[in-house]
Image 1 (cartoon, rainbow, N blue to C red):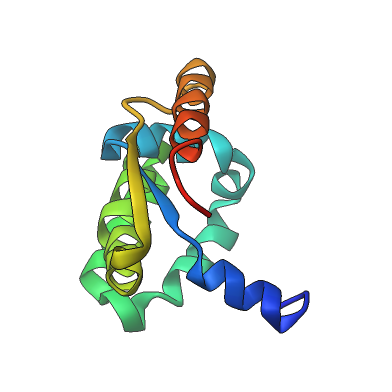
Image 2: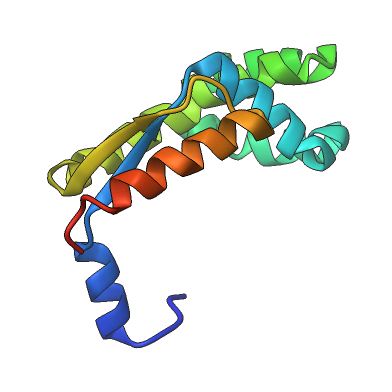
Length: 130
């Protein structure tokens, strides 16, 4: 459910976007760290992943299950990003492509690298008419 006046959502949906690109491996390492709590409960995680069988197929979810069981959280996050998140994001991004005002590349997603990326985003914001 959307919170706030419809005019706010309309403005947000029309606003220019800044796309942030990061390598798959960096995103996998970041996600494994950021979602440690979710990754720790393997049974609950597999219940959630099983729901995606109808979208991604049994073979793909079986691969995720094997990675989950192996305890290699970075490999699991890599596979989830590559097999599920990225395709879904690409579909959504096609509708928003004309609104991308700038792209910022983050070679890594460590705290220091994120600070540098934040500084680049701030610089880009100075050049975008909102």
